[in-house]
Length: 414
Image (cartoon, rainbow, N blue to C red; front, top):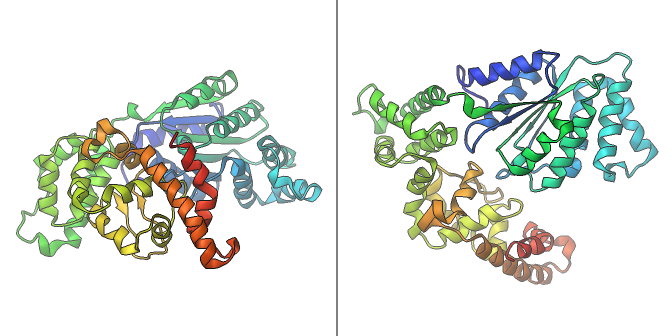
């Protein structure tokens, strides 16, 4: 989703100034802590620049979502988007595939040079500067691949004739710091730190807007409440408790909306500040549910999401046995109505919370134990489904997952 009107105005203005200043560095790297709103900013920019025709492409690395971009296909994906945005490069992009039908399997360097760099540089009518938006670099499992992508792009951008600008977002991480500090990237990169812009006033706007919507949709439950809800004092306290985290504010709204709103709001006000304690408040009632932590752990640690039905086939539970223990956690999980869709966390930080004993305490999920259980589930699923279906070609997504990922989970138990 995009930023609400009149929020994040300072950082958005700074980024737009970077885009418009032709003498500025061609890479802008925005860093920020978990839940600070980096992806929302990236989505806002992608929407705005697509509307005015200057978006060359956008790629979002989503750890918790249903879509995962492979680093091996990064430039192929970008080239496709660029061909749509700049039709005049399409004929030039087709040449590598005509020369070599297996071109899609070539190296990243070949993809970039022959599909993006050479076609743009060869245009008789140079394009106006366009922007590429790449969100959440840190969410990719392939650290080496990401570092290679940054290096390839940085090297190309030292040539002024190559008229693309790249906007990256990520959490702070050692391997990204190392790559962006490397001389090639450093000389073409402007870094922005999101925490340099105070988010508290924006969070106030966010909470006012969404809690007003809660009141409108649940007005029958709240008819006896004062017109001003939440009160100014309560709103002040909520903003303070958020500690500048948009994911805290978003989780709070979902928590309040999942039940009797004024009771849930009071419960949140009585809790201590911070995202971890809000996650505890949301998840703790479910600890008595059978298999709650087991199911949550499997959802969070699957290499790629599985539908509710396929997850059940893999771990030996019926769909209703998966859904029921999670029903009270709709403030932190997206639980679809269709068993052919996947349950997923609202934010990647949920996985970090449950897998850290110091943060989650009694809600701790041991990653090695879950991965070991998934190894056993994979080994059990493969022959069972083969015997039912007769051959691998007729196998369910659960079987395909088991074949492809048992070794991945085994490595993570060691």
